[in-house]
Image (spheres, rainbow, N blue to C red):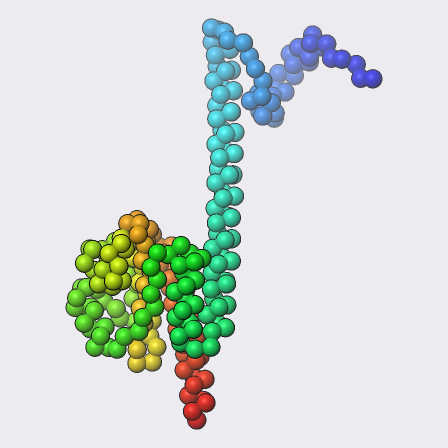
Length: 216
C-alpha cells in the first residue's frame, strides 16, 4: 500500500525545485488557484490562461488538419474512381455520360455538360460570350446571368468552371455549373478540371487511334 503524500512534503519539494514546472507546463493548465489580488498570483493566473488558450488553439488546429486530410482523401478516392471510369469507357458517348453523371453524383456539381463543337460553332459562342475557347483555355468564376444561361441553358447557374479540350476536328467544352455564386472562385477548381481535361483528351485520342486501326 502506497504512502499518502503529505502536502507539506510536496510544498517543501517545490521550494527546493523551483524550476519543476518549466518542463511540465501542461500541468499548470490543469491546476486550480484561488482568486487573489496579489500581483504574483495575477501573473500566474495570466500565464495559466495563456497556456490553456494555446492548448485549445493547438487542439483546434489539429482537428482542422485532420478534417482537411479526410476531405483530401475523399477527393482523391472520387478522382481515382472517375479516372478509372473514363479509362474503362468504350466509346465517346459512354465517356460523356460517365463524366456528366459522376460530377453530379460524386462531386455535387449542379450542372455538368461535356459538349463538342465545330470551329465555326466555337467562333459563334466566343462572339456571344466574349470568352476565348482556344486549346488549353480555362474559365472559372461568376459571370453575367446572360452568359450563364447561354452556356448551360439553366438560369439557376451562378458560377462556373470550363475547360477546353481538343478532339480531332472538334472542340470540347467541359462545363461545371454551380447554383452557388462563390463555388468556383479558387485556383484549386482550375487544377482539378485541368486534370480531368487531360485525362479526357488522352482517352479520346486512344479511341480515335483504335477506330482508325479497325478501319485500316
